Image (tube, rainbow, N blue to C red; front, side, top):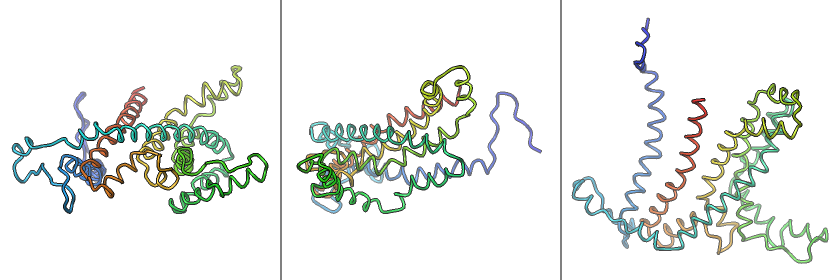
Length: 305
């Protein structure tokens, strides 16, 4: 029979508890920290005309102290000096932010409707919402090419209805990229919102209504604030992958659509400047850590209340 620890002294973890903690830690170390360390190492290397196209300047096998003095940050200095990267970062943040906001405005009513639907219908409605994920991501993006082109379905429909006389320039624009991101990542926004709304206590809404609150006031003062965690989680799940998106801007965007994912692709495969590409990737991750840390801090505050 295990004895309780004295007051103020933390309880010793059992072997099973250590295994439960070690499993995700090992997963993160193997599939995130190790690849990230390799990316950082390449970002501190020098580009060369060789295979691979970089020369490491930080090699632990030759002595740490001696190699630390040789570390170069040329890739990061080049990143700061080239306005193309700054424009790519700003454009990516703008497109991802617009796509996240539009996803929220579309997903919230759907999540609310699903959460208010009869319980037996909810699994079917959730299944329909995530059904696009059962098909290939590339096929879904390619389908939007057929819809948005000058001779595509949308322009044909608008001209047939007499709303326009000439095709609208929908394809190869920033708007097309936003549409593609919203369509592709909408379930990432919908599911956390549904979980947050469905888990709310209905007696709170009933109490607000009994006290004289209108339906709009009940939504603004009860439903919306209580779904804040779902909004934050959904926004992060859409915004973070959207910032580094490459496929959608490459297929739906024009040549002037700057996104950091395309810049990384060009540095890796066209320019073969792996240190510059890795430096851009490390900088991007540092930028994305800000909203993640903000979310984690908000979660900790919620848990302490």
